[in-house]
Amino acid sequence: MDCDRMEKLLPDYWQGALRAPDAEFVASHLKVCTACHELVALGEGLAELPLEQPSPALRERFHAMLDAYEEGRGEVSHFLPRAWPWGRNWMGARPTVAMGAAAVLLVAVGFVVGRSLSGGEAARSQQEIAGMQSELTNMRQLMVLSMLQQDSASQRLQGVNWSRRQPKADPQILGALLHTLRYDSSVDVRLAALDALSRYGDQTQVRQGLTEALESRQSPLVQVELIDLLVAWRDDSALDQLRRIERDQNVDPAVRERARRAIDQLS
Amino acid sequence: MTRPVPDEELMMLVRGGAGDMLGVLFDRYQVPLFSFYSKLTGDRAASEDLVQEVFVRILKYRRSYRPGTAFRPWIYKIARNAHADQARRRRTEVEFKPEMAPAILQNDTAAASQQEALLHRALLELPEVKREVLLLSRFQGLPYDEIAELMGCPPGAVKVRVHRALQELRDVFLRLGGGRTANDKVAGVNHGL
Image (spheres, rainbow over the protein chains, first blue to last red):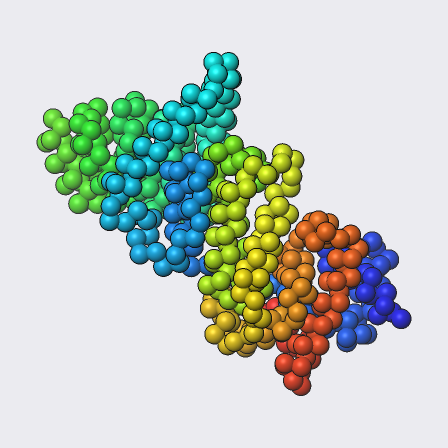
């Protein structure tokens, strides 16, 4: 009898949706009924089974599919073989031919679509596309900023990678990357941020931020990369900071030597 | 901390043609979907194919996603259909084989792994429809109304199905485990997690 009542109550019990008298009944019944107790133990065991991780090949296949879609715009390439030998370079040995063909196709599609739209429709469609693109840019920005603040280093690393998809420099994202470069707890994430920032040598905000990031507390690995980048950019405004690093006894000797050579090159 | 962008907003962008936003949804769903499939089919390779197929279908049918639709039931609906189509193609019953046991067990004690393997085996001996409702409700933690929407039945019916499936799982679990009670075994599972 009591077990019949349990049958009605347990589904809500699992989801924590029982009211007090029912919850008390369940608790006291579980103390005396082995069968129901076993059922609950099994249900809890199911809830706590660990998630299983797919192989890294799944991500490769997904991105290959996505790349194919992006290149064909709307044409979803179906099943790529599981053990695709070229990974993400799925076009294989003759990428130029395939890219050429894709480009011709895109131009042809664009021509046909352009021709088929009358003047008014074309203008409206342009507006819609512009609206969509601006929304997309905002969304990408939001994604990157959100990911850079996550607790897990791998997610922050993903955030840095996402920032590379920004078509042009966005001050907020550059600011977030510079912050990551200086303060992230993981050296890998800091190095990735530096790599992402290296595309923006023409931005004053970035050049200044990089010079500031070259401080004594910084990891030697990052310091070396920073110095090399400043030299590659021929940024002589970093000279003062380089001299400070070169003189600083707390800095790794290899880094100081690197700084000395950089000073010679930039002076 | 910035609020995570809701799945629904991302899917609306994918619908509008921003394929790269699907990458974020992939990051969010590949592990839950793979785990679901792996436990449903007992076959890791087939499960990876199915996850890939789900995302191919999302791109293909992205325009059928309507604003205001909750994304999670929508993607699970696609996942169920993909699995049903694959099963139709294969037309063979999945039987449990030892090599189908999940390769990655995150327990550090052999005993707990054993209990977990027993639970997996018991699951795989259930009829698929029962295994599925248990996985969706207990393992994936989907609320009854979402499962009801997926299965096209009232939430009350889902609750009954979950309970009946769990009773059957208990019988199989006891039969496979022999002497000891489910309480002992599952306690082992839980402590090992």
